[in-house]
Image (cartoon, rainbow, N blue to C red; front, side):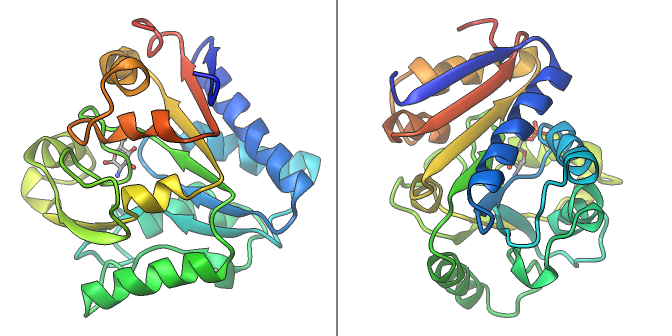
Length: 244
Ligand code: GLP
């Protein structure tokens, strides 16, 4: 596991601070870093720390470009459950990032295939992703790459699995309001990032984390592909590390 640096933080706040510090160091070293960003509840604390670092330690986002992993489809950017909205609220509106350097798949694109192909081109044009932040779904999904997604996949449209709709329904008024599709970077898109930062918090992630890091490398557990990457930071809290 030389390629994977595992850090067990004492709790969610500690995990969030440590993760933010990695991003801080990256951006200090390379002011024009290209960051891959994730949504979900896990990285919220990390974003809070980044905002504080921007305010107190002059962390400068003016040269940074960001690509988000995924977005529901169809969904409007003004919907408070869109990942676009999430990113504005949790990070972008609080820091000095140039709005032209923010990329999130368009949840209202009229031609979904063209949108996916363009997203890949935009990542290439930016020089590829330096540091990709990942959360993890209970079934090992990364971004919205559900079990069965081929490892060679690029940005593509997917049908959400029933279990994902169920677990994300808590954020919507009702389960019926959860969009049935999404656009996500593919597994290959994620694997092409130069460094990956995987975060997990809470006991409910303990089992999938174990399978991710020590289980068979299989498309049944999309996150297990990370064992094949040569530079991964895994920052988890004690609860999530229970089975490691
Ligand atoms: C969603 C997102 C993923 C995220 C996952 C886990 O389905 N598409 O990017 O990693 O949920 O979410 P949470 O961090 O809330 O557990």
